[in-house]
Length: 172
Image (tube, rainbow, N blue to C red):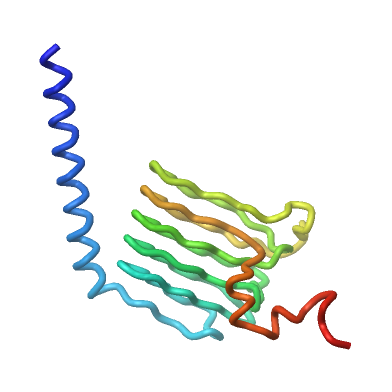
């Protein structure tokens, strides 16, 4: 009977130490990892450590993005971008945080991720995906965090009125 309380104390102590170590590592990394790239660049880096970051791409031949969310989160909006004909790759690392990828509904996506006490999900409608289009490969890791893939983001559309006007409500 004495073994169970000892195990629990040891487990809790190790969990607290791991959490503190992760927080300190994120603080150090915050000064070293930075976002890079503009809206028309073909390759970008998006970093959200202890904060939030939203990045929208309008690249004519999008090829690569590295996304890091560590005790933070954000959004990578690729709806105005065009995939490179050879395909593209997004690498996402969500550690105690989360990131949302907003993609056109027709893009083909291959997800190759590992989730450890976290999750990865594609919430897009599968009937709208173009089976002949280029492929966006999403590689990643979610540790106590999440990666979400969607094709609609009403919160972003409010900030971009030209996108909100597309469709049936657009003036003629």
